[in-house]
Length: 292
Image 1 (cartoon, rainbow, N blue to C red):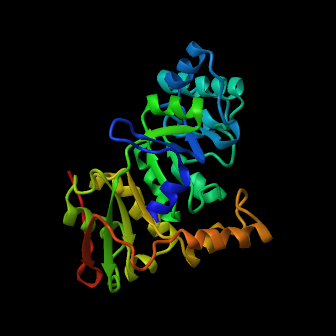
Image 2 (cartoon, rainbow, N blue to C red):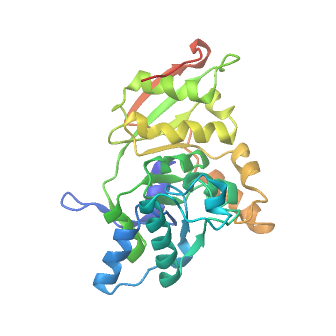
């Protein structure tokens, strides 16, 4: 699947001297990693390349006190208040749709995409947040980027990337009662090591993965970064399609039926080959507790 999605998005191929240029389908932004990026655009006299493919939400620095969100009371933390205000200014100036503090669609930046149907199989998705890998649960190529890269995507809707290698995480048989998706990803990380995924995209596959709900798949892909990988994904299937259908930004009617055909086509082929593989026996896993 990774190879198919990558090839669909290459604008300029990689060479020995230069990384590939890939097109980005969806750029999710928030108040922490965008201020410097927008300042860079202003300093160079650049416009936002694709406002229609850019979405902003208040996320990292938002208060939890109800009166600071809905009651008109100022945000108590000065740095957070400045970041929230600056995102409002930047979104207005550059024409970006913004889910502000009181917008019912606002939420964790890598959760609102799935909730709204913005996250779809075959998309390239980036955000200035390391857990952007969450979107990989839908068969998307999704990864976190730094502030400089945020600015690059804002200006060009493309990104410079070296092509990673592929790593198949085969989870066979079934999870025992009481063993959760969190237990499973911790077991995977324990098997490959906290840097085992460095330089790879992780494909989570096998009967135990296919049996997971979308929420559970998001839990698995979210923590790919804890195993050293920027990208982790699950092949799209009926569970994926049923989750997406009917959501606000998802295709509808005949468009949804056509989308399903294409989404199905990007799933990994049965004879797909990987740079590395590991097998996890699901039935041998037990609940896990972590602590520091």
